[in-house]
Amino acid sequence: MSKKRTIFILLAASSLLLLSVLLLKPVSRSENKKFKGYTAELFCQEVSSNTISLHYTLKDPASYGIENVPVSLGTVSTDTDSMCASVENALALLHSYDRGRLSRENGLTYDILEHHLNNLLKEAPYALYEEPLSPLTGTQSQLPVLLSEYRFYSADDCRDYLTLLTQIPEYFRSIIEFEYAKSNAGLFMASYNAEKLIEECRTFMQMGENNYLYSSFEERLKELDLPESEKTRLTEQNRNNIKDCVFPAYQELIDAVTELKDTGKNSCGLCYLPKGTEYYELTVKGQTGSSRTIPELRTLTLSQMSEDAAKVQEVLASISENGSGTSGIIDADTSLIPGSDPEKILTSLRKGLDNAFPESPNADVQIKYVQKSMEDYLSPAFYMIPAIDDAENNVIYINEGRMPDNLTLFTTLAHEGYPGHLYQTTYYAATDPDPLRSLLSFGGYTEGWATYSEMMSYYLAPLSDEQAALMQHNSSVILGLYALADMGIHYDGWTLLDTVAFFRDYGITDTGTIEEIYNLIIGDPGNYLKYYIGYVEFLELKKEAIKKWGDGFSQERFHKAVLETGPAPFDILKEYVLGTG
Image 1 (tube, rainbow, N blue to C red):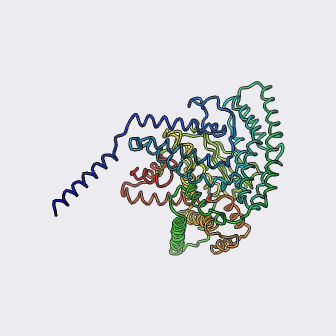
Image 2: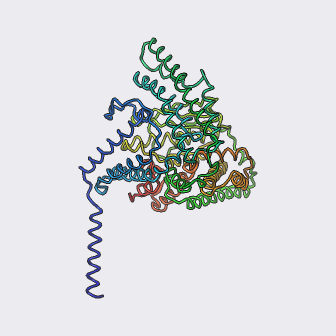
Image 3: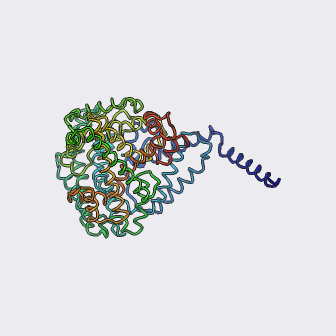
């Protein structure tokens, strides 16, 4: 080896050593203190942007230095230039902090915030592609539930609530203005989804005196220590505000959507819109938290479905070899499920966490039921995320109209309760994370975890091993079909006929059900993917943990690492769970 070459290699090695020293900067106490101050200020700024967000995030805003915030529902904006400028400024400020000198916890917050802001910057030009009135999850469905669960910790909360009711007309007008802008850009919703929206709003109004906004207000008012005369006055004010503000706002929305109903230029997937494919790709990344491309997600889905189908065949073959009939195995005896009492089911599920999950923090949960007249317009169940300073008080809503049997209720409560949303939320809250993390939503993580929990719950139910395996893998395959349909409709341009043909290839032939699925996917792109892809990404992460940890792997260790990292995109989650972050 020449002397010149030897010197070059020595210099190169020295450079690498210098680079590694630069990269491994010591943690700076002052930099961490400044960064924590920055995230605290950003949290207070963002959480105060509207009163519902503030009230649902914090029971006691004053303890965070937030006081005298004007009561507001916020607004829906079409100003994409302003959105882009705001996000660019936020990124520049974030990058002013030295990431290399932050602690592991602050470094994680930095990475997640940077990812979140980068996504917002990419999505901002597509603001008019968003749909605030989507089926099941739109403002028209969610706002009444949020209002009915708006807690009255004090008389001031009650008065703020009544003020919010008076602001609904103005807030809805901002949505209507947004929908007109969508229409002018050729981006208005499909006419059949507009008709469904109109029907939903009319049903809400037709509840009249039986509307849950009346009864829920009176129930919450009982908890306040106020003179009866004041309670009577406030009750009357609530009734007047619903009659004079809420119902007219819904009527105004009905009138606007009726006028716009036939202005939509596309009744199929996003790929038929200008730059619709690019928008769908961004939507999927945001919804799932996965960095995989759509073709890669399709391959991942087909691979998981193939794995599930192979497991089903394996169980059936084993049953056949043992000489047992399959009819009793496939038809699970749901009478063995602990009744239709949600509290008993949640107790049973919580006991099932032993050995596989870290200990659950104490938490109270109240079960409520969707009003019968709204069952067709709301999800099968939903968990109300508690305030971060009141995480022990939780609410789960059940839609009895979508609960065909006790096993469905059991697995649904696993999704919403233990070891799903309630458990994940309260466990993470007990780790005392940076408050800013509560505002950074990652649906692939939260819904993926809840779906992963739902799948595990089949093995916690009083079913035979064969029944549990068959039903769990069958459920996984069905979710995989929905995911493929989502990608097929929005990325490949499937029509309703294409979608019917696809499901029929898998033995699903009810055209009415398939059309309903098609319409839901059209109205809420990527929604099914956050459940299924999030779930499969957890399975993939678990495989990598098993490979890396070897004999040191345990279910509890894996679940603990995932839960303590908290909501995050999967690339970042992987780094921190496997110890490289």
